[in-house]
Structure formats: C-alpha cells, structure tokens
Image 1 (cartoon, rainbow, N blue to C red):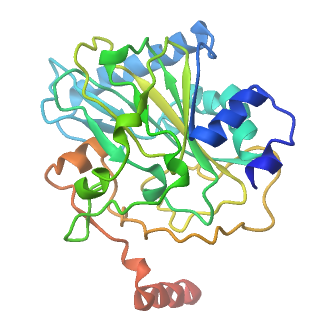
Image 2 (cartoon, rainbow, N blue to C red):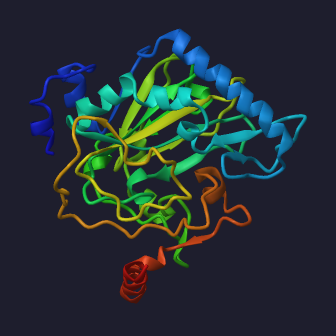
Length: 320
C-alpha cells in the first residue's frame, strides 16, 4: 500500500503530521507513549531473565551474552525472542504499538519478530550502519521496527541514530568481499552516505522510536549507561509483504500472526530488487556478534538463491 493510500485511513494513535513525517524522514519518535506501570512490568520480567543468564557461559537459543559475561557480572546483550519467552512481551506487541504500526503500514498488519537489546558501557556495544530489510527481505518494503525505551535514554546511552530520508535510497549489501554476512554496510558505501545529517533520538522512559526497514541506522557506543539501556524492539510488516525466507530457528510461532485487520489475499511486489538473504538456518546470535566477527558467527549467503538448490528443495518438499 502506498503512503498516500495509508494516510487516507483514519489514524489510531499518531497524528497526521507524525504519519507524514515518518513517510518523509523514515523514522519517528513519540515520547512517553507507554504508561510507566506497563514499562515497569516489562522491566520486572526482563530482570528475571538477566538473573537466569548467570547459569550460562555462552549464547543460547534465547539469550545472547557478551564474551565478558559471567555469573558474577551478567552481560546480556539480547533477549532474542521475547515474544515467545513470556506472555507479557507478546501482549505488549499486540497492544498500542500494533495500532501505531497500522497507522504507518495500513490497516492489515502482521507481527514479524521481537528482540530486547542492551548496552553496558563496555566500549564494545556500538552498532554500525545497517538496514533491517537486508536481514529479512520481503516482496515489498512496507515493514518497520518499533523500539520501546525501557529506561531514560540520554545522548551518551547509545540512542537510535537514523539518516533522514535514507529509506528512499538504495538497499545495500551487508556482506564482505568474501560473501560472508557481516550485518553492516561496507565502509566504502558508508563513506558515500550523508552520515553528518544523522539524527540521534534520546528520549525518556516509555518513549518509542519507529524506523522504516530501509532506513540506514546505527547506535553509538555508550559512555555512561548504568541501566543497560534496555530497548524492546518489535517489528511489523504489512500483511501483503511476504518474506523471501522464513527460518524457524530465527522466529517464534508468532511470526506472521495477524495483529490488525484481515489477511492479505494477494502479495504486493515492489519492482525494485533486493539482495538475497543470509543463511540463518544454523541459528542467529545477534547483530553485536555478527558485526564484531566473533568466533562461530560467519554466515554465508542463503544457498537457496542458487536455482539448482531451490529446485532440489522444491522437489524434496513435493515428495514429502
């Protein structure tokens, strides 16, 4: 659905000016949208998972931990699939933020995935410039991510940084010269981007950030964060945007669940091509691990982009 068509639908949460700003700039910040008691309950549940992390020494299916993680000093970088880890996370994804998604994607919205990221001021928590759509390309680009600040986020806490208007620009490769996935735009391409125009988005606890799946964004390393800067991210897609690859190891049973409106009877195809996705069939740790090139993280292109592999997979599926 085109922006002008979406804007014809009545707004549920956002103002018309906010909706127009999102389509113009590719991002939006709405301060103090989420009630404090809702945020506090999410933080209470999250604290329980941080405590559970003391029992592990390496990343697993639900928690990504830093190399410096220990029982004495937990350094959890990500809750990988919070929507499947506690009903409260899933209830939150179905609440007011789903209405926000409908204001910007149109009335028919599917849940894509969630994650809860942290930054612990250890000097290794910078996230380089990237685009979300490269991680999960779809038939069209009507996807977005809504981040909820679970604590006050000040300029030194690594707030979201976005290059305004970059969602209207090219989709970049996120592979290195050896065709290995890095989860970041190559340095020579970044050098051509107007990074000096980037807008960083500090905001109080309970605020949300929204960014288009094509928007070029990053976060700087934290300098003094004591809260861990917990950021709960929920991604949504227009119901008529279908994924090119959907790996069970990466998402929960809520993947593609309709959260607003009605199911799409037709897929919408954007004529602009996009890079083939990486092969996450062995699982995915986190963007922190991928961008840092930590041991065990090299990920090649999805072999399914080769015609012979796709044909074999189709024949095997038909035989079953």
